[in-house]
Length: 457
Image: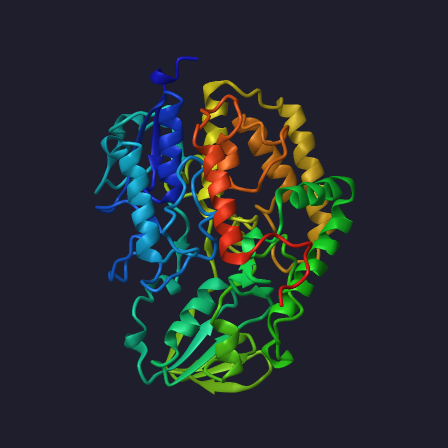
């Protein structure tokens, strides 16, 4: 296949869009990235504009630099373990510069719609592409307008939600808002960034993940229960949880992300934030009713309740997710921002290049039926439909197989750089081995050698 004759539009200049552009260009595709703003970075390119969704200026990455990086572009040795907003944006800008992606990026360009070439109004298109990558993310509904905590000074503020955004905004409001409430209907597994003295994403080795994946393949339902119990024990060992905060019961890790915050539980403990029952209705301009029947007076409500994952721009091509489920149907696999985006786009490039043979339609249907049976058996009691949940180990193994990384065949260190370590269909990076060794040395110098799982004292 002559990939140079295939034009690809990549929509969105965030981490996923950037590595997708790079990986497609690497395989010879004629790819162009379109970004509606005047800069790259996506959510990490902060702006005060309340109409533009970004992270906060104070945002700290929830994944350490050892895992949240592209396979052939490690962070700098002098970077902190957890990058802040400015540092991560600089990392993305350096990525664009090093791989000379700038000439293939069109800034200040709004893509209005992606239409099928078979539609009657085809002549209204301005450009024609063979493939399209949507990398714009979802639409944040209310929390996206939160920029400066100073705007809520001396107000009674209720944050609705109980995940990372709710934790970040709640703690940001401390010292500014007069009172802070966090209203939620379910619990969650919460962790600090460092567990047993090391970054949380370094707890499980690749060997451990492989064993867990094997268990999931043999006994998928049983393995979910084991996984949730292990996460529950680890979470409880990190912090003393007041039952009044209602962190338990927590939904399965398979359908919900964990909370990663160093400040949220301490602020609950010192009374700066109060955990309250789920919001049921707004009675008047200053009074809300909670699920336990109590009323609270508030000046402002900030909703951190998720976002719709329907792909934008392609309403005429792909069926939307039912609106009743959309907010709860985010991708709930472990979203290691750069690592997963890099691996996904490697796989896409190999598939479009014709180097990886996809299953037949009948084989795909059998896989889908088997997955639906797993979802129904494992997650049937969940309050929302888990439309986009995946079996983590099986999904990652398929991505590595499609991308041609040879990781499945050669068990190694759990680092994004391993995806470029071995010879395979995608391009090998000669610096991968040194990057893995350097990362491991850095971890040992900071936190000591990996132990057998015993808590450091």
